[in-house]
Length: 385
Image (cartoon, rainbow, N blue to C red):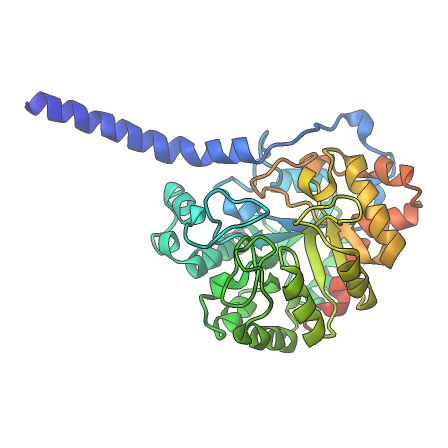
């Protein structure tokens, strides 16, 4: 009997070790895939001379991945950012995702990110609290900056960005990150937590993610409503703090309510447009035009649901659509790198966009704006001092 107990204990121990050692990496490898690998011949001669390459949306902080080592899976790490001549990547915080997510209808009754935090052996507080796991991911980015010996820095203000631009003009290997929240549910129904995240460096917030929350309705929620009374207070306070509002994942009614409540420039950090790829995930012409009127910024995605295609040409087609309707200065890249989806390519594949954008008729100057200049200029105008 004693021998059987020992065997069972040994088997359970092996299973536990295997789970914690391999499960998180397995999900990272199998969820964050690419459809195209770049060849050296795909790299344009003038790609590396683009002064500011940037992307509006990446979920890399969700994963337990060594930021300082180049990986053959996933989409972003520091070596790949440097190889891609990236000046800025906005790192967004995913703090709760329901099981079986889809773009049509989800409730908030389940939470896969708590389980992932447990599997990654992150602090126990992160297993049960969306706020705590969001703050933990934020602290990770600052840890990366501290450990990078100056190669990577976190930008939180206009002066940070201005200084970074001056420094990078002398050293093109420098790169940077900014912080955003994907869903305000991690405020945990407490408006004062907005100050906590502002002080932690968060500079844009999407009101909802894949489910309705206490602030408003998601495009993928059950009710898909507009702003709640608490949500209206949240929007006003975000404006006071100069935290940019991200309309990604917002229900149409929520977008209407926000547009009626604020005149501040808005972003859609990662999206497609219904005029090219008509589904519940994507932005209508009506809302596209309103965002353009406010000098906002629309980040076009690098995954199939956003652009109805799996290559750079598909993304370039949607970028052309946006540029034709609201102007080339109001469109950017919003990849959704490392968002548990397949993207056209990882960060090193960004040079593939140049040929695709040229085929859509964009000039070199316009391509430099789309590839990052517009993001730089938007945050120079809208970050707090």
